[in-house]
Length: 271
Image 1 (cartoon, one colour):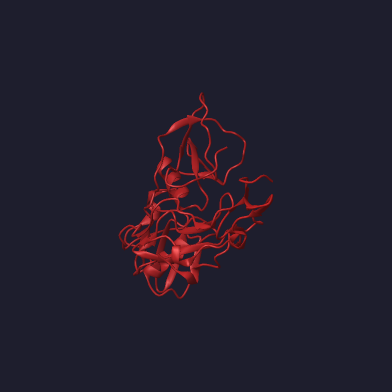
Image 2: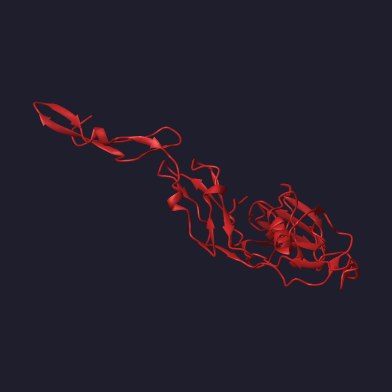
């Protein structure tokens, strides 16, 4: 190496330069060179700091819901009582180009009441899961939000029984199945109403890449609602009552009649 030349420090995977990342060849006389600041060329384990977790409106990222601070660790939001996390219910520890790891923030995190008013009603014949010994309707709502085996859109609650459903009064097969008041005494009903933020609707064609979920729904708004509640859903296609959910965003193509729209409130891969 020549005097004045610079070398960059490259750390192993999941490590980063915690002090300096460069050293310079210095002339110390008599044709002898020496690298600068060699004691400050240190590679440290790359982790995210709990102190740097993003702020949450009406909630907090609780360390008890973080499995760790290493790369790819996921922390989940804890909301104030009666409120629920928005579409960004978690944050992930990431590092890019060997730099210090940070908690990724797709958009502002906040907790709000994303539920309709509680009604003396129920939907008949669309219960996907029964959870017994549930304290109250608010706990039932929390269980709906946390359910991962399907996209929970509504709840029926009564006698400490919490019924979770992948349907709501807007996308059931018959409006007669929404019963007011409920045929079961003292049962109440509530539905999730967060529908995310969407791009303008355009036409596109099927691409044969496979779908996150496909099913029959009554209209485009129902398809959007399902996508909003489905983990990993980034875009959708809708035609004649058929809804396709995608875990990516795509470049729309012309000449077809599928309606395409994508979520603009989250980052997703493009295919």
